[in-house]
Length: 390
Image (cartoon, rainbow, N blue to C red):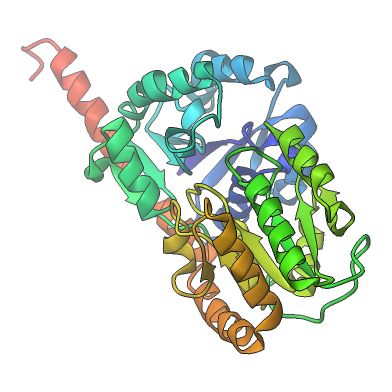
């Protein structure tokens, strides 16, 4: 089976979707009976797929198609022609904003979350119009849709009116060779125990400003030397986060690391006193799970799919209740029995997720899409044939 995978939505490898694309690609390539993969890769992203060289066909996409609008047009106009020319059996697009209208072959799409439908101000009106009006129609054109959580599946049904029969829930995996308990090592820029938040600096969706306010209350109440460490690139609204940190009476105890490379994440988790993830909405949420696998206690929320992912293995807060968040920060910093309970439960919870399982389920969906797509095309040809042929 020849499967094409569009990778142009990975934002130079600095997003959760990028981690999904990289990990799924590796796992599919490792399947003993896996598909023949063709990866559509933007020119400057090719080094990020060095691991696939010689194992998958790499189709280069011009850098002029990196900007969002041009990238959407490339998917709708140029990609279908390339898919036909390559004779692909299935095309997988791992982003709802890039789903195809035309059907050069059976189509599979992954939808990670519909957070813009829940978080006011996450995107401007043009993106929201595209998501609410255009994408809903594109979703109906897909042969199979993969939802990465049951929560996301419920949102897809609610907002896109996609029937359950055309959708499968396949949880993301976890690289247990990388994310596992290990020795804590000192970190640059960090000279005390710290709360760690790994997320792009996006306001209001990732809720950094309320976290900073809760940290201020924690510091005022306890006079603790603990730090707040924020790892992630600037994104929409990042200026509000930097301003909140600058206004803090404890500004010197708030550290910005910028984007954290994948290879540095496990050590950062292992060295953290606790990982905090107070996002207003998530379709999955990699960092809490990665932290648990590394033996780090986690504070998060039940918003979106986070309850589904962390189970009862995390300290849970209302992300809009700053006082409650401050109390839980203090508990994590001072209650060793609570910390030990979260570490044990978190390790067990993280064991539920594996990329091999995700890849096997995804491969089966490719088979389903191919079978269903062929049936649809055969029926279409039958209807178009002259009556005397049948």
